[in-house]
Length: 151
Image 1 (tube, one colour):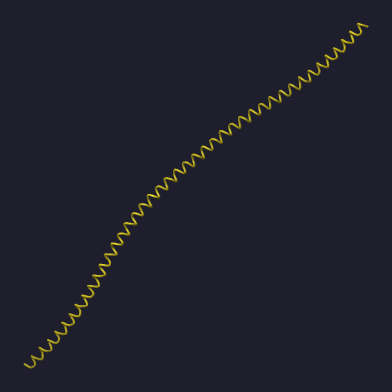
Image 2 (image 1 turned 30 degrees about the horizontal axis):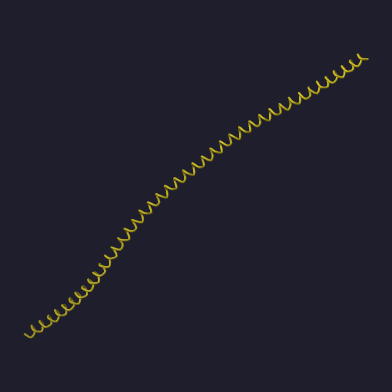
């Protein structure tokens, strides 16, 4: 009886031990699977973090590139504005000089017109004088011819 109890107890312990061993194997298998899944997830996470870091670097490079392009474009536009301003100032100066020259020519033209009017007036006086002289000469000729005929 004692021996039977001991044997039954031993069988239960062995059975429990086998059940525990099976359970341990199942848990070990699950743990290995979960560890493998975790390793795989960790590898994917590392890969994604690496890609994310690469994307961050690319974004930073693009930002710098775009910034440099805009700065370069801004510098070019600023230089173009300065060049255009210089050109405008130069043209304004040339225009001012041309305007003064036109004013001077206008004054000269007025003087020439005045002289022309004076010359036309003088020309008309000369013409009248020449006509008067012609008449006097004709009258003198008539008088001379009359004296010669009378004489």
